[in-house]
Length: 174
Image (cartoon, rainbow, N blue to C red):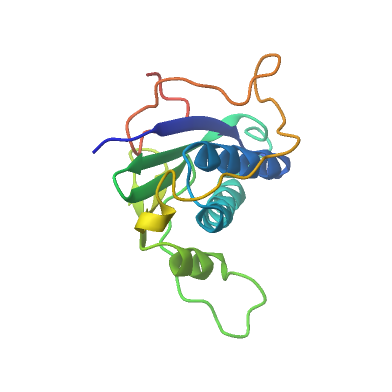
């Protein structure tokens, strides 16, 4: 069963992370996903987007669409990916004494599967969450998203366009 899918080109800018949270919250709520799952997926995307910014960051690219975000609901599987033009990396276990570097452990705890797929340029970090019957659309009461900042045009909630193929670099023509 195919379901809804959305794609956004995102800027390489930490100040945009808050807007990204609103995008994910608004989209998953619109799809009828239960609030606790929405909150978990916001945290997952937040971590992956911030990591992409951290690993792609260069003064030349800052603020430009260098990162892509896709969300997809197919049957009981909620999936997503954050695609960036940065170097492909393989996560390594962190030293228990280190102060940071626990974000991917949080991601792993909140989803059923995740991974890194290298592309010709950059990489796609993907995740999948299998939903229970009570998580599925219509099972929960959607919550209201306040103060959603328009991302394009007067009053627009988010840009809509045909998404590029999974794993395609951000800005790929459709």
